[in-house]
Amino acid sequence: MKVIPFFKNSLVPGILQSRDYARGIYRIDQPDMSEDDRERAVELRLQRQSLLTRRLPKAPQVQVVLCESVLLRPVSDSATMAGQLRHLLTTTSMPNISVRVLPLIAGPHHGTVAGEFVLLDFPPGNRSTPEPPVVYSEAITGALYLDRPNEFATYEKVWSSLLSLALDEGQSFQLINKIIGEVHHG
Image (cartoon, rainbow, N blue to C red; front, side, top):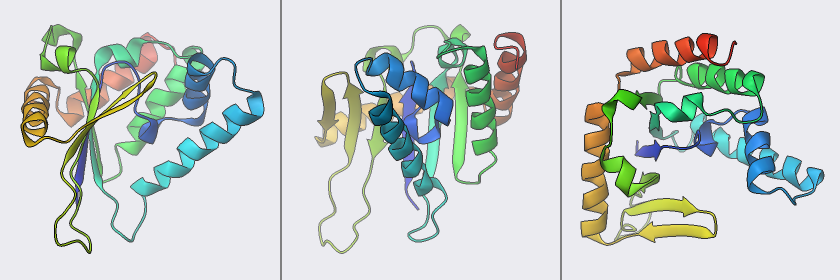
């Protein structure tokens, strides 16, 4: 089973977004999008989440490191954020999902410079030569795919440093619960 590591410092990754949170993101990101198109985009995002519960091929392991600021930054309103954070807590009960919080007190870290990214390492499948591993980084005008071995190795080191600074899963769960109650009044 493959592991998909995500580092996010501004938003919850789409694979773990609740419907209302995704809707709020599309309102910010695509203000000129019609309401019908926005709803279709949200529905597509939610359908992609079925990857997390599929049986065949086996669902991937998803490891997410979220900056604490993601949990504090409101999208839409407090009710939407409280719902999103409760959704995060629910998804962490799945055996293939890990969410860890990088606390603000960690200070500047390698992820500050690297920016948000996902490490994609593809299984060989039916190919004799597997696809090379890729660092995926999304931007407003497109995405960046870094596939040179030294680039991927650099981001693996960044990932390791983020894991060393992040709270463990239990501490992260407690912090998310605390933020729901104290910040978003959920």
